[in-house]
Length: 519
Image (cartoon, rainbow, N blue to C red; front, side):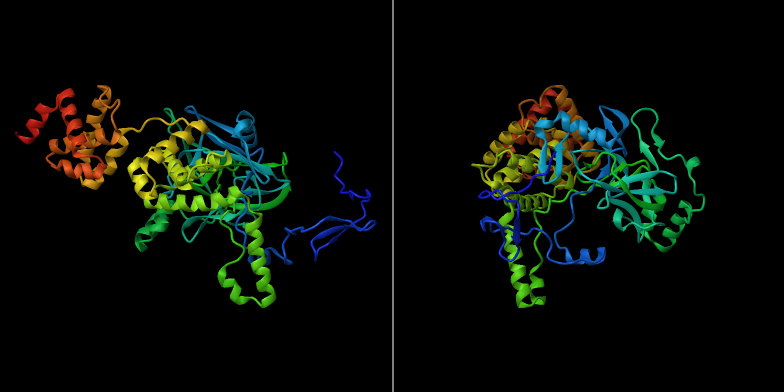
């Protein structure tokens, strides 16, 4: 395809000049101003090395955190585990869900459901976690990391891998990685059926025998002796630590790089070296500011004017959607913090809100109500029990409005969300009422019997959960008043009494209750 050549609309000449001071493009032949008020989006400084560039740039981390096409990833779907090429996996999903495909600059992404990958949590526990999104972007060049196992991993320079620093597992960018550093890999991957785990690295194929390490047992002894909890946690973690033997730049296989989003965990196992790869999901630079207020006091008058001009243009060139998201995501984070929601719920609700904005579902509705509706949908999807009353209190929006917005957004986005399970409310209510684990177990058993007897149908999950907990407390001699239980559950005493009577009558619990209480 031939490249596009800009011409003068008056005389057809291609002899054009750019006046950078005035921001104009002028035809040399006829003098017509072809374009005016042009904005130079390039950098306003000169950089001579990567350290100088890092200090002078203030626009946040890039989104090109991705893996080469041929790199394998471990995927679980429909109770089956398979190893697939990440490029093929992502390309097929994008072709299948083409109507949901979104673009953010050069990045293409699409939400997915029903897939899980291997990742570790804050306690270094390895398990399969849900993938919420897959993405790709053009990449001509990638870094190839050679590990001591003889295996190689190809990722972009801005991608992060995990290493050990100060007895902790921390992320490090590939373009900052050095030979001799250790990368973290899972020792085993959990399976589903009879075989409980599988080794994903063949130690017989390791090319390098000399490794400067200490044995796990010795590390545990040292940690116990000096009360080093970080070292103890690291020594007991189901990880392998593989030394980097070489790093080089190579051409990308397909011209694209790929990534998976795992909300709340921000890592997945990938590459021929089967190492943990970072996949932090940033806010796409929406919260980025050109410099900080403190910077102004270090600038001269000329530089200070440039500083203000940059900030002004940064705001002007942002779209309406970006400005909306910048405010909405801040509100979302505030409400999520107030409700003490986990990071995975916060990530999911941000994704739901972003999709709602891109489809124009926010128009005609308040931003706060859509944020609350997205949070409620994320809580339901992740089985984190929160009621409409709690969301109403946190957001200041009427619960009926939140309910209407929630139903509208989920219907328009085609989200399938199952009804709330009363069992999910038991741990939180029991904790607030300071009830024992035995009482919690009894309440769960009562709820299971109630579900079998179809007593939960057409009744609010909080009411039936609170009544089950009230009965269980009486049976275990941990008496709580109906008023106390009602306050914790956010319902009335009348609801408690009605559900309580139904449970006693339908499940024949009167005799058991009399034996326990002696009445």
